[in-house]
Image 1 (cartoon, rainbow, N blue to C red):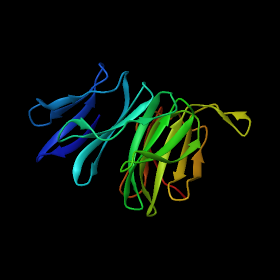
Image 2: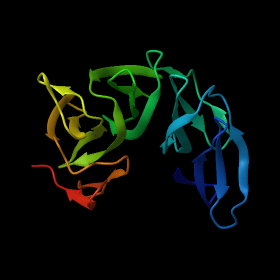
Image 3: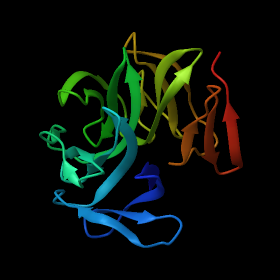
Length: 209
């Protein structure tokens, strides 16, 4: 789930079991607007942003697409983003050179960065299938952080999840934690550039060096 402000109300944006996304007024618990419909399979990822000053959401699903929504009208904006015909597992929002972008990860072992103004792919990078993606600023630079299932790295199979930091300006990996203590899908970048991630041992706060 995610949250936003719509017409002065705090609204929760939640994915449901019927491949739709719905909005709920946090004060009353009542539905707001119409359900967001269009995905043909389960919605796996969800995040909110502002686009041209209007509240918007990006959803990612098992139908191999990511979709951009105007939350004021409950309508899809532009064409959906096709993700190489594989499941889209996670999505996060960021701003790059003043442009709103979406960072997605899918079962095709690829991270993609989308320009939301044009719905076009800016670039993609191979990475093990992400369980989770977060995005934000670290030392003033926009980054994405992916948490992936164990996979092959330099010919060796990792025993635990791999947490990878990506520089969204240089488009390259700039750090990673391998064999971490059981990273989960719950993670977030704080305004001060720390990564909060849930692990088997509890909540960890990581700082990039």
